[in-house]
Image 1 (cartoon, rainbow, N blue to C red):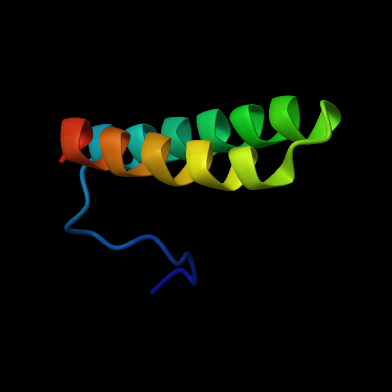
Image 2 (cartoon, rainbow, N blue to C red; image 1 turned 135 degrees about the vertical axis):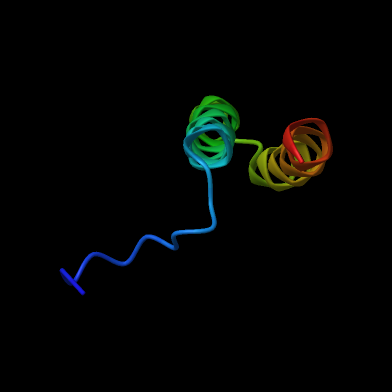
Length: 57
C-alpha cells in the first residue's frame, strides 16, 4: 500500500459529492454564525447534510 487512506471501493463521484456536501454545510454554517443565530446554523447544516446525502447516495 502507498499509505493513502482512500478506500478503493469508493468512486470519484461519491468522494466529490461528499466533499461538496461538506463545503456546502460549512458555507451554510458560516453564513448563519456570522448573523449570530447558531441554532439555526446547526439545524440548516443537518437538513442540508441529510438532503445532500439522500440525493448523492
